[in-house]
Picture 1 (cartoon, helix red, strand yellow):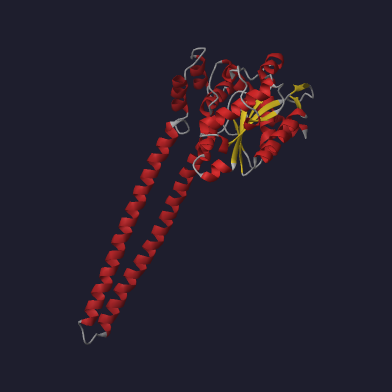
Picture 2: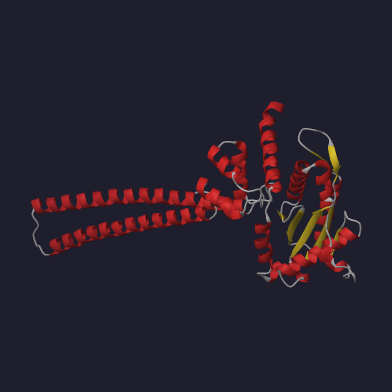
Length: 355
């Protein structure tokens, strides 16, 4: 049993080291950046590794995108979309050409039928020989039309399959672009789109809530146990959030901050969800790798705001963040609802460090 799980654990450890390297270099944790450094550090592409090594200590996103377009042209940024657009345009033009040709073929068959009907109507007496010729012509024309129709159906089926493949690749890229590479849950990009949708309808405003969760004293955890340990804790927390709230949108929106969008729940129900998560995290013993060593007890501070209490996505996030701030200053490891307490005078919550 242990032997079968070792490769997966090795891959997880390597992935963690890739993320740690990117963090040390100040590289944004985009999927396309992760792909570059995963290939470079694994040594599977020597030329790519040399180009990465030649970069400065703080490579720019433009430099990384240049490498990505060079080594992964079909999977990087606009290259994926442009390639898909060209493929779709080409396939649609071929389908249109096939349909135009089929229309011409059917029109020709129709003319044969019309001419045959006219010929039959203009003759009072039809000889056996003439009737046989008519039957032969109609038979050939019909068989040809049927065979051609079968070919068209097969060709269109193939084209449909190719277009479905392109669609699948686009969906895969879209999902990759919206996924946090470390925790494999939704990222800030996906969260921004999801929170904006709340205010597209009255139902969204009435029946949605935002929960912001921030790991308490996460900087101390990283300083004491190292970034690899911190990354594993982030992964474990993301898994707890994902599995304990299956019907809730869960995203990692910052280094140690997570966001949950709850739909169809009252303020009390939302508070209960947040409290259940807080307790689950508090009761979990966080360790790393194969070692049973417990790094530390981890807790979350959380802030809640109902969509109906805010004027829009930015206001909703701001108010949930203020509630999170109040959880921090009240002692951490607790959940605060934005409307439950008035703003504290003399406190500048924007300047407060959450960790």
